[in-house]
Amino acid sequence: MPASPSTYQLDEALKRYFGHDSYRPLQKEIIDETMSGRDVFALLPTGGGKSLCYQLPAIVDKGLTVVISPLIALMKDQVDGLEANGIHATYLNSSLNKTDARQRYAKLFAGDYKILYVAPERLMLSGFLEDLRQWNVSRFAVDEAHCISEWGHDFRPEYRQLSKLRNFFPDTPFMALTATATERVRNDIVLQLRLKEPKSFVASFNRPNLAYRIETKQAVFRQILKFIQSKPFESGIVYCYSRKATEQLAERLQQNGVEALPYHAGMTPKKRAENQEAFIRDECKVMCATIAFGMGIDKPNVRYVIHQDLPKNIEGYYQETGRAGRDGLPSDCLLFFSPGDVAKQLQFIAEISYPKEREVAKDQLRQMVHYAESRDCRRKVLLGYFSEEWTAGNCGNCDNCLEPKQSFDGTLPAQKFMSCIFRVSQVSSFGVGVNHIVDILLGSKNEKIRKWGHDRLSTYDIGQEHKRNEWQAFGRELIREGYIDQNAEAFGTLSLTGKGKQALRERSPIQLTRPALAAQKPAKAQASTGSIECDEDLFTTLRAVRKEIADEKGVPAYIIFSDVSLREMARDYPVNEDQLTEISGIGIKKLEAYGETFIEAIKEYLAANPDAERFNEG
Ligand code: ADP
Ligand code: ZN
Image 1: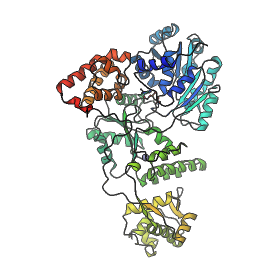
Image 2: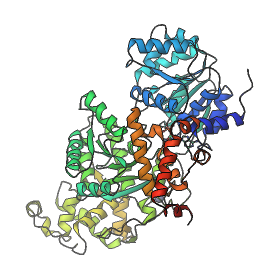
Image 3: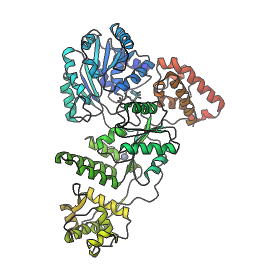
Image 4: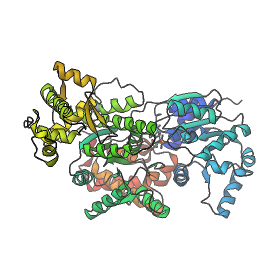
């Protein structure tokens, strides 16, 4: 076995080809392990930098690295990105015409490429594995490796074929990479790919640059519009519950001057591809989408992900919000929450025919609601879901940490609410939901109340000191805290749990969350994690330069330079090549290709704005 390349070589290649000075967490360890010839399993969150883990070894090692990916649509962008960094790469898939494919094969036989992207079905085409044997394969990297497992959320039968690969290449190192895997899926991946005593790496799921925030859903369109208008130049995704909702939202946003498009599985593949392309190319700022959108979106500068409706489970929510801020710059995750959404979902769940499945769905929803209504740090709850402990205390980047909700002695309202449920159960043989209890407490004269005689209960009209939405919130909190049970199968009817009965009997003290103030405080100005403060005017100028080059080349803007590179330029004002190499993300190839253009743009800007350089002095 040849001596493995030194750390020096790797670090040098990192700077030379990618323009980076340091590694993201676990990248170095993963790279060292695969370079030593060992099989590797790597679980890194989205944005964790999985690609570099096989790209850097590919450059330094002799031979060809074969990357297996299910995302055919992404292959071209990935190859463009590599070529832009001066790394010879190609892909083979069904989108190529004969001549093009033949040329690529010829170059593969000639050993011209360092990296080849293929879909799993290609590997199994007759003769392909035999060809591969002649291409001096140094390593296989299986991306989105969870697709191989039936236990995962994105099982792809074609991936199962990959278990044959090992027979053909018993001694070639394998890497399995994924951003989603439970313990069970993890074991399955190792088994299915027949990894040999793999070294496993599991990174933290924390995404420090993502700010999590939950808002009460009121006039949700206004709320969304206001948020989007506060970031006129940024790209974002708004997830909606239904296909129709994506179209309606996109249309209303357009009417309000926002470049928005819909995306959902009911559209023709052509239309879907067009809209996705427009988003990636920054021609459309806002994608209004169902959860069908996102897998295979590599766009690193998605600056916000909004959930217009409550997601079904935390796993999905985490994946969807994870598409924001892959480049590490501060990005927002905003969820609009309304109790009505919970009731709606409970109704859907009640229609699921298999009891087991129904229970799972209910439990997942319960955890989601807990996340939305909890007073705890959002990050702590999210990571807890993935069995990761958050011990750092205040995260400084979620609404609950930035504007803590206060609790108060809610014994009295809790007693009123619970005894109302108890009184109803004494006179009526059926259960009632949260809203009906609130109606009784507020002395409503609606038909049901009169028909059922609930206006004669001792708890009728004893709750005027709180508003309707406050009572609803108390009710939900008591459910969450286990005092009240809400029956999903029976339209969300309420009953007291053992804990609730005991608390009612013993008048135990109960803490409740103080109702939010009517006017929301604006978020404090703060330098959030990962931020690069810079001259925003210059950043805007450079962004325009980048867009022009990207359009001319027919590639997405981020292939030219990342937002990180542009922000660093707008902070440091590099005016010669030496200074420009100091900027992160600028390797030799990009320096040659675009260095001069950007240096000129910066010089021009400085000439026109002689005061600008003060930015980084104070
Ligand atoms: P993943 O596939 O894990 O979601 P990517 O490989 O797409 O992540 O990388 C996410 C972003 O992080 C990309 O924009 C990439 O350029 C950047 N990145 C990766 N590694 C580094 C590093 N060591 N230093 C700086 N940026 C990095
Ligand atoms: Zn927090």
